Amino acid sequence: MVIVVRVIYPRFSKSAFRGGLSGLSAAKDIAAAGKSFAILEARDRVGGRVLNVNLLDGQAEEAGAEFVGPTQDRVLALADSLGLTTYPTYREGNCSMLRNGTLTTYPFQPSSIPPLSTEVLLELLSFQSDLNSMAAGVSTEAPWDHPNASIWDNMTVATYLDSKITLSDSRFLLENDITSVLSTEPNEPSLLYLLAYIAGGANKKTTGTIGRLINVADGAQESRIDGGTQLLPLKLADGLGSKNIHLSNPVRKITLENDQYTVTSDKMQISTQQVIVAMSPPMAGRISYYPLLPAGRDQLTQRMAMGAIGKAIAIYPYPWWRKLGLNVQGLSDSGSIRVTYDNSPKEASFGAIMGFIEADEMRKLDDSGEKKVRAQVIQSLVGMFGDQAANPTRVINQRWDAEEFSRGGPVAFAPPGVLTEYGPHLKAPVGGIHFAGTETSLEWAGHMDGAISSGERVAAEVLMALK
Ligand SMILES: Cc1cc2nc3c(=O)[nH]c(=O)nc-3n(C[C@H](O)[C@H](O)[C@H](O)COP(=O)(O)OP(=O)(O)OC[C@H]3O[C@@H](n4cnc5c(N)ncnc54)[C@H](O)[C@@H]3O)c2cc1C
Ligand SMILES: *[C@@H]1O[C@H](CO)[C@@H](O)[C@H](O)[C@H]1NC(C)=O
Ligand SMILES: *[C@@H]1O[C@H](CO)[C@@H](O)[C@H](O)[C@H]1NC(C)=O
Ligand SMILES: *[C@@H]1O[C@H](CO)[C@@H](O)[C@H](O)[C@H]1NC(C)=O
Ligand SMILES: *[C@@H]1O[C@H](CO)[C@@H](O)[C@H](O)[C@H]1NC(C)=O
Image (cartoon, protein in one colour):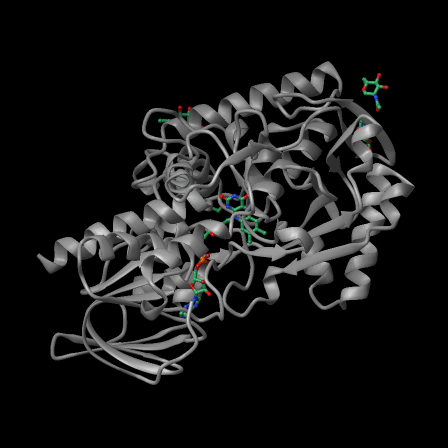
């Protein structure tokens, strides 16, 4: 979404009313400071990458962002302030792993490491500890300032794995971890980008670790929000007032003339002093800016790319796996879905298994029809959890790569060379144009928490500029 602040001359035809979490968080602080503002949102709904699919009985399933966890202070505080509560991600019973065609079930591990050989365990622990200590030295404010930045930004995560990992099972688990965090293959993001992402998975009092990103216990997948995460943007939007939110209004052009910005969207044009562009860099790059933005800013938006991601949720009349002693936290080395969770609602009024379709697996299906994707989803779930998984009453399939105003997810990542060459352009304002979005956050970039703190940062920037 785009937010214009201190509106000078609004001209628009009244439209149907009701942006992303970063934009709404910025608008909340700007409204609280008593400044006039208008929100221009491309979609016919608020939430962006946060989306509830509503089911019978007022229950919802998240087709986008879902989990919250410790040290995500901004999102937890927002949920609390909006009267929302959290509950633990279901974990009672055994996890499942499909590896080399063999299914293994094993008790839930706080470390998320399945029972493999001692050599594998030792290699993994030593690798994770190296990665964590490298990340601990990376500042999320300026990762490019690290003494090793040019070395670490010179290689992909896959190149680094090649140099450190010798055992096939360690490689399988680490690839699975990286793909489930960024929805890329390990040969896409730079090592420096991954280190900064790990460093960012923390609040000011803690240090980020790879475990914090991937784990359920004490990690980013620890809890869910009762009623679904889209209640966050919906309730924020209620507080901002529908008259200030203009849906179905993609912004196409931002022009500066005589110290005044004109923001042109499909249904209206607004003149204003300050503009917030609250979306991922690739989406921000699709707006035309006059005068042109600095070359470095535009090249950054050309180079940061969205992960390829789909989220599938199979619905069953009840969570039948629980009686069998399974928690459907699954890992697999094959099939369209390689990571799963029990997505049943808090009261378990129906059963739901959620699986991500990520990176190469999503790309393989991007051009396929719904029927094929549904068949692939069911095949993966049957492989991990048996024949009872074969007959869901419904399969929700959210294909983010095909969403006009996201074109992938969960986050825009940086391939090699991008952070060191263009990193400072991520959040540097250009005149009265300010950039929010989870990608710009120092803490929990890529997550809802990061989106909220980026909105708060940008609101402070704008309020300062208006002083
Ligand atoms: C499948 C999936 C799973 C995820 N899981 C989690 C999770 O478990 N936990 C977690 O914390 N995070 C998760 N995330 C990430 C989380 O959703 C994002 O970090 C967060 O929602 C980003 O918010 P944002 O405001 O920065 O961007 P967005 O949500 O992308 O908001 C940008 C807004 O701008 C709008 N827009 C785009 N172009 C224009 C234009 N030209 N004019 C006007 N408006 C425009 C978009 O419609 C959108 O509303 C997940 C994401 C996905 C896709
Ligand atoms: C759970 O895992 C343990 C240890 O691997 C195993 O002995 C037990 O049979 C499993 N139970 C189920 C229901 O899979
Ligand atoms: C930089 O990398 C080298 C070699 O990989 C390593 O020995 C050194 O400790 C790193 N420096 C810092 C500050 O992390
Ligand atoms: C980056 O990689 C190139 C090509 O592999 C190599 O020539 C160069 O020395 C590397 N630079 C650093 C700083 O590692
Ligand atoms: C899987 O197969 C690879 C060889 O292809 C082997 O190295 C590995 O140990 C196997 N892992 C398990 C858990 O069977």
